Length: 381
Image (tube, rainbow, N blue to C red; front, side, top):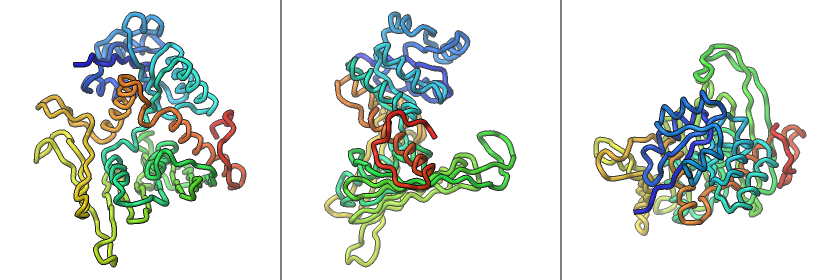
């Protein structure tokens, strides 16, 4: 049996408490050994929650607890700074999104990791959620043929939504041009769950068209009130392929997948049935996602939950987002253990951030198309 990969949480952000600490305590093959915070108070609080040593000095943490990798979970604006610090201290790292706010900061982190032969994964979990993973498995099977156009309709903001949209085309697809429109509108007062208030507010809509070098297209839509407003309940992602299409239709978290190919005879769509395979008939942990395709040569396509453990009582009943984040951790663990590249990685995280910056830059210049790559010194707009 292999020794567990030793992990330190670098930072005391909210996700350190509500996600990373809990996941590491139950994820097979890893061991949480220490936490780091900028202040004694914050580091001690996180330490007491998860019963591991706390540090405010990263050199001392590394010398005394010998972690293999660090999960960087800090305040939103400190991602790039603390991520670079962790790499410079010799840690393989899982970085929060975005990898950095400036492309130049992302490049500095990537270069520092390459110089030290360290692995970087980015905590981009949206395309790792079970339903998304099943769709990617179906696309990879060839049942849909070539995906021509991919859409994100409010299924995640910024780089998250771009990542979902790009995943259907394949992360090796090369974007070359971006056209964007950003608009600000006044909307009726509503109760915000995030801000816990009821006041008039503004909405910022972002819309983009992304051209890829092989003629395919990506379409991106987002609204900044999409996470907390009853005004904007729509959740959808789509792909149009040569042999069929996929459409996610959702209100909040209640989503349905409509995946279709041509029915025999070519006059109607044939819809696939999606099954969640639970540990027991009446529930338990998620074991797998299965598409019953109706195609005789490939009647079922199955995605296995990488976190699933069949032993009774050992597998927590995580929801889809937790499974997605656990997938990010496992990607880095496997890369470190096998000396391979993470399944998503720093360059993909950088590209997703670059595309959002390009949408905003295009809008700021009156909607003119922006040719990629951007200047690495490009600021967040």
